[in-house]
Length: 242
Image 1 (cartoon, one colour):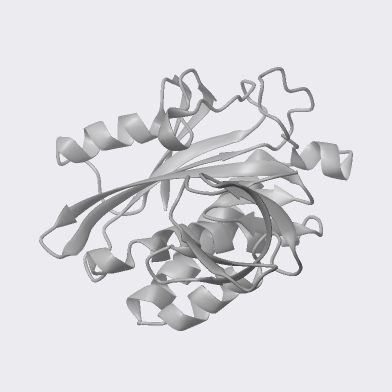
Image 2: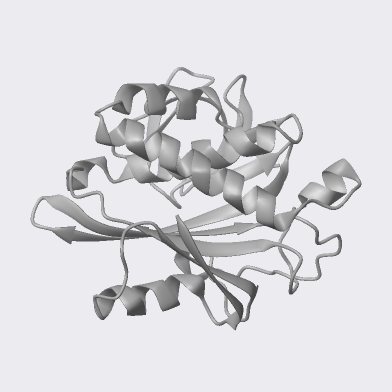
């Protein structure tokens, strides 16, 4: 991928969207900001990141071969790619459904994906990633942040880490182009946070204890309660309690 680095941008996703709107963005272009002044998480959440300490970047894919019903594959692609790379640095990395990256019970990375459709297929996907790397103090009200430097007790080369992630994304993306969907889905599900055992969750009906059993192709999460009832959730419909 071709990486274009800025010292500061309000949002790498926003900048990339503007390039795409002007037809000035090829597939694989990556926009990186050493500081993101208005970084966004899912559903308008902000993303805290110290200048020059972390990775905040977005890249464009044109997965026109994917039907709109397979949009969740892109979320799985990026989540699995980041986990694979972080596994080479430390252990106990997992994917919290739908696409947060966790170390133990702490969040180390977030992913924001914005897809545009053309007919029944995906036209363009803008994928933004915020990864805590060398920042060691967090002052926002985020409940459980952690960085790679905090885990390893040493600084990490940002350029190398970015290159490793983008390379892994390309490896999995090429597999998708070749039709290898089931392998990705299985790897994603196998590496889910809380993949084994019963934990406490809450939904509009209150708190309950359940076990994650499956993620469907459209991204729906299935949790089975201790009573054996199956419950199904889309994003933001269930809370992982601690």
